[in-house]
Amino acid sequence: MLSIIFKILIIGVVVKLVLTAIGSLNIGISLNVLPIVQTLSSFFSVICYLLPMRYLAPLFVLVISIQVFKIIISIIRTIWDLLPIV
Image (tube, rainbow, N blue to C red; front, side, top):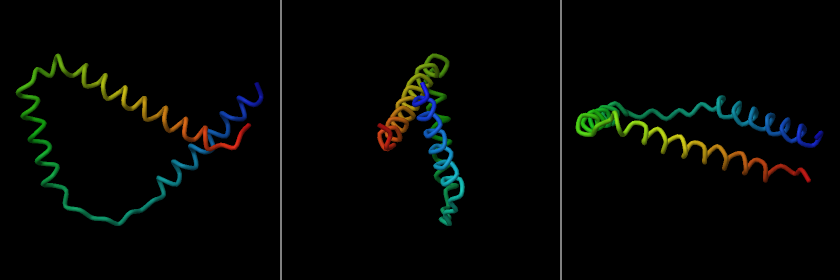
């Protein structure tokens, strides 16, 4: 029981350190993305006009949520495998 609590505590500390490191990055790359954003916006508006989004939106949400769940599980497993806990 104590080892499980310790593992959860270590994972929490590692996640906090990673999030802190990502939050403190300052990348000085400036791109003119406005035309790209406008193009994507017009593309999505055409898609939403042509497809019945009322019926397809739950399917899109399901697919995206499953992919996010897989990514989160893979990150947790990677961190778990990197920890030197016996």
